[in-house]
Amino acid sequence: MTGERHDAPAGLISQRDFATVAELLKRMAGIHLNPNKRAMVSGRLNKRLKATGQKTISAYCDALQGPDHTDEQDAFISALTTNMTRFNREAHHFTHLTESVLPALLETVRGGGRARLWSAGCSTGEEAYDLAFHVLRACPDAARLDIRILATDIDKSVLMTAQAGLYSVADLSHLTDKHAERFFDRRIAPVGMASICEAARELIAFRRLNLDSDWPFHGKFDVIMCRNVAIYFDDATQIRLWHRLTDRLQAGGALYIGHSEALPEAVTGRVRHEGAGVFRLAPVSSAARSLARQRTKTTEKADELER
Ligand SMILES: C[S@@+](CC[C@H](N)C(=O)[O-])C[C@H]1O[C@@H](n2cnc3c(N)ncnc32)[C@H](O)[C@@H]1O
Image (cartoon, rainbow, N blue to C red; front, top):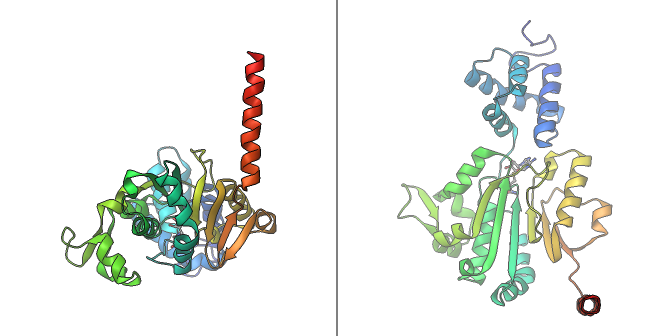
């Protein structure tokens, strides 16, 4: 029994094995594998077979589900995720951030408040560092204030690259010269590479997180970038994710999504569309704010009377 069926031309995994792999990936990462990805999946998993010494895809999948295989589960997820990204991707999002979101956020943090930004599905880190560059450009002393960026991804290997913060000089070509010069250091990096400056690193925490699982934090965010991630999920998983992300927006918070992604109607009803892939939760109106203050005062009075 080889696990390879007659429906598979040489090098291609069988339809049945493809279905098993797709089911596993959906369960582990929420990712939907389109059948037209069979050749890509075959190529990538054949490498895992060589690395693990397994003879067939079905034996590999059986082993993957056994206990003590978390390292190979990580390698499996890493092999089948698409991590394409670059600096300054969808630059209009950063223009919107700088012009419409950061001014109020920075006023808040300079006044002693806090601000949280989230790059959800950050891949090798470019998106999170872009956020940091824009924050630093508007507020060079950001590290001393309570403004931080959480950057998460399911794929451990891309997070290691992100954390290292070392990029080839060619990767910097998408940045403006000012950003490339100001936020990278070439002197401390190997030839042909550039290292992210300390000020940008200080603002970011990279963490592993499966967006299709429970999230181990409860806070809300002023900015969420979740771009070119949901496209890999099926419709139901996408809808659930968009609901959960908008639930995590602060009043007035901004959600940025990828150019080929769309929010379902149930979610667009809760946010304002402010541009291509840009959505905003309504800010707390001054009337609502004074009503909340009024309620707090009334509750305090009632508490006093009870004492
Ligand atoms: C195409 S990259 C997008 C990177 C960046 N957001 C951008 O737009 O340039 C998609 C990223 O989503 C991550 N990803 C896929 N499924 C995920 C999941 N269930 N939870 C968290 N990240 C996931 C992949 O590992 C990959 O790094």
